[in-house]
Length: 419
Image (tube, rainbow, N blue to C red; front, side):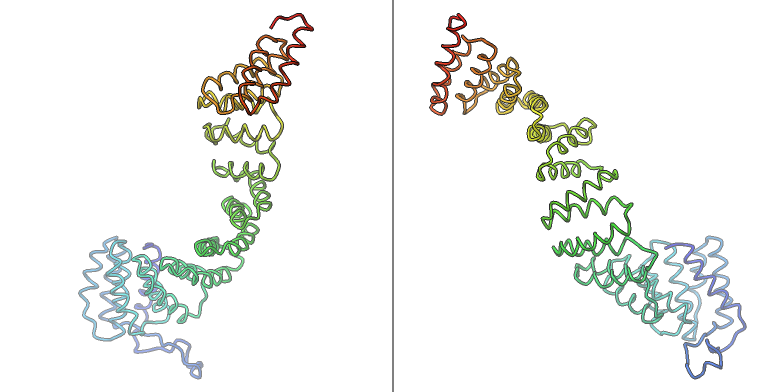
């Protein structure tokens, strides 16, 4: 329990006991007799002296000593009993590990409903707070509502605690009203917590559209908070509004709000899905190089695919080559070779394609066709002729290869090359 808060409660009470002793005093004065209010009572002189002594011990950081004095008080009047019980509760609460005893004495203080208005209200609220701490959520709800009924206050923090209690009780639908009440009570002094609770409730009850509406409001109120931007972007994806998801995450990235690998990869994926592969490639390349995105086979594959889709064939081939060396998989060597041939890097293409064949592929004919073409354009007709004959052995490529056989033979003959 916050010691400053506890001290305030004690100081208020000590001020009361130093006033002249009287049986009862009208809280509003005689002129307010037509509208009777709760009467202010003063503790008896004997009890008041002991409480003052206990406060001296408390001020000297001797809480155990103060408790000894308070627990020894044998008050006879109902008001004095409640008054002393409240002080004992505050002492226990200030210790930080005696919540159960604090709750026990607060109940004794509150149940007679006899304490002065300020003390009674604060006692109910402290009791509810301690019940929240000890996970007695249903009792806390009762007392938070009792505090608001008694004081007539609509307090943002209290409504937030009520919403939290419903969350702890898994009564998710009941969180929304107190969260909205908290937002209204905070007014211009906006607080993020009730919005967090609303989004949590909507998410866990799968009301994603309602969560989106809440987050759209929140990013306008707290535009500097990166968390809201990323959450809104992800919720757009949950409701399958991919365009708004892309726009939101793109704006978040431009503001420097995307700091996680998963966020960068999601944005890159959205670029690719929305036919902007060049941006996807630039984004992934930058953050793979920086180390934010892991340089593994999956991410390199996404990067290579993005460059390929963006028609940057040389870059795509380069990353497929890196991927092939990393994994030693024929499919990546095959992809690298095909792209190198497309980029007219024929010598490198032949090396990659032969490596793919060495590791084993299901489409041998197609690779032999590409090797034959690469040798042909390098004017290596003998090697081209050998490769195209191997392609002829594959039923899938036999027809295409047959046309190349004569073409290679004729070209070689015309250039006086023996094959």
